[in-house]
Length: 179
Image 1 (cartoon, one colour):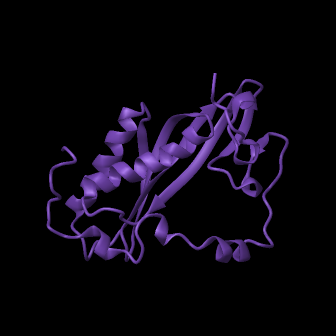
Image 2 (tube, rainbow, N blue to C red):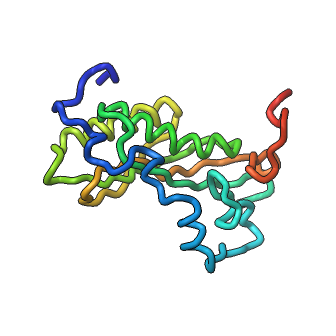
């Protein structure tokens, strides 16, 4: 299915969400308040963890290999189901790329209002995500779904990186990627 094709219905997906995409996130100040007393678990092999506020977590597996892990999902940002799936998958994969890594596998994360939206529309969302992951050479190997009052879609992605070349929010500087 091409992104120019219309969804199987004329439903406006964005009308089923109280906030589109990242607008549905808990505001940073409220989130900081909620997690104020929590601290990340430390371990010698955790290179980037909960306390770092980065795009993905990084764990040292061996001297030359770090495993990256992230999850990202959100409510519809566009009305076309296929395009929303593509956007959400690209967003999740980009967390691994942002750390200087390469995605290895992904799993789908889906919340779907079964009584409000047809399942074939969910299939279009999943196909969009699958197509983007395929373009990235990242197999989608499963997932998890729930019946939810609002549609939500995204992915949990596992990737790898050279631990000596990790890109981190707290060490970014101008020209970092320049040759």
